[in-house]
Amino acid sequence: MEPANGPTMETNNLKLKGKVALVTGAGRGLGRAYALHLAKLGADVVVNDISLQAHQEYNEALTAASVPDEIEALGVRGLGIEADVTQTDQVQAMVEQIEREFGQLDILVNNAGGALFGDDFPRTMDLNLMGTVHCCQAVAPVMQRQRSGKIVNVGSQAGLIGHRSSPYAVSKAAVIHYTRGLAAELGPYNINVNCIAPGYILSSRAIAQGRAEEEQRRRLESQIALGRLGMPEDCARVVEFLVTDLSDYVTGQTITVCGGYVLC
Image 1 (spheres, one colour):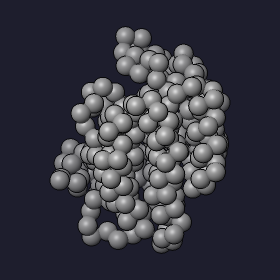
Image 2 (image 1 turned 180 degrees about the horizontal axis):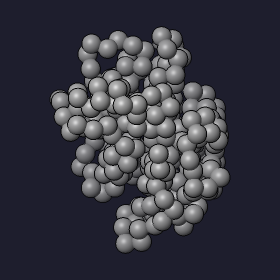
Image 3 (image 1 turned 135 degrees about the vertical axis):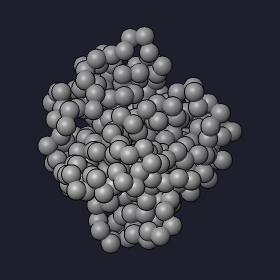
């Protein structure tokens, strides 16, 4: 699989020039795609992950030593911060560091999470829901002082399908509901809070787990209206919509990026 983005800048399309973005869980996979896409739009990007070498776990090919280095190669500032989003003290320290180094924080993409703990409800809820809550609570005061900001939470199509009661599905449903409530709270400060719900995407982890294999791929594609699995850039383009002025009058919404798997 080729890298989500190459190290080139579209100089005529710098919609986010002068903005600072924080993307959690961005050391690989979908988070990396979001971080690189925002950098290509001109934003300075802070890459958070529990390990900045997370790409090595699934042999994801980078164009530089790390995602922050890839971002720097695009001609904007890149900063890597290793922090566990389930730990409030680490999240708060991360946001304080961003304020010190950049003086502002305009965009938060809460990507950190996943179906990592099987049937363990507490750990799954802690990672997917509380990790999102911790980051939003740390960033909100910064954006309130600025009286502007864009927050994009990451749910999942699993959180929209009623017959699934796995910890992962429940935690992602909670993220979707939390997005609505937070949008109402922060709207008076000119802060937009929205959510994307990715479907079956060919991320490096999904590929390592067999999603690209012919039999599984064919089975999944037969259930998708558009007849194909998603690519990380399919999600990144929707994030672009939600963090630029194109979505200034959109808040509290969840956009499914699933090719029509969830038709609602």
